[in-house]
Image (cartoon, rainbow, N blue to C red; front, side, top):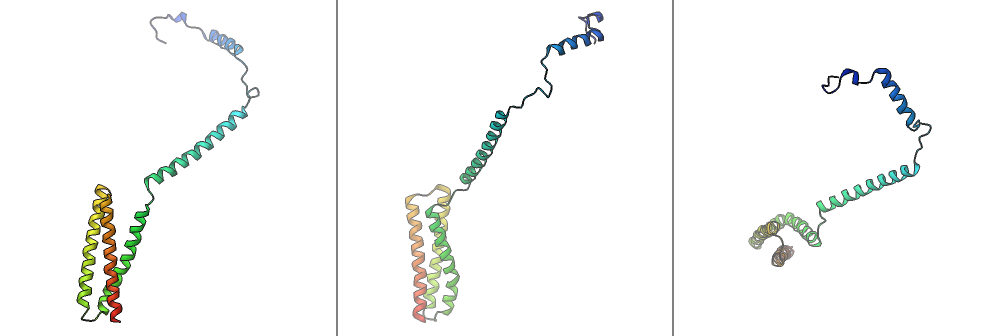
Length: 164
């Protein structure tokens, strides 16, 4: 040890160090393993707290996932159902036109083109709702467009039925 404040004779010798540590060891309480007690109450409380923290974390994760993936509203479910129904009718429409007679085919084709225009308007309103949010007037317009679209499909089906 190179210390400018202390001289070499100020430091304890090896024998003095050993004697010093013996005195320190005698003054310390005996902490051997045989005397060490295990505190069972703390152990069980700690484990119970850990289990509660795990369940709370799982609950928070589940709740957080629910917030990130919102459940669809009733109106969304209605629109999904209408989309599914109109998609199926859309698949049937070309075969209905093929089956139609030459006299009613132009009427059915114009009805189908009107349905395509309604689809375009529905998509436009949906994009507007995504960007700016839904308002009562947008909701009403969307409902009217779906109703008109279904009326046109009904007209296609009735024209086909009259041909049969």
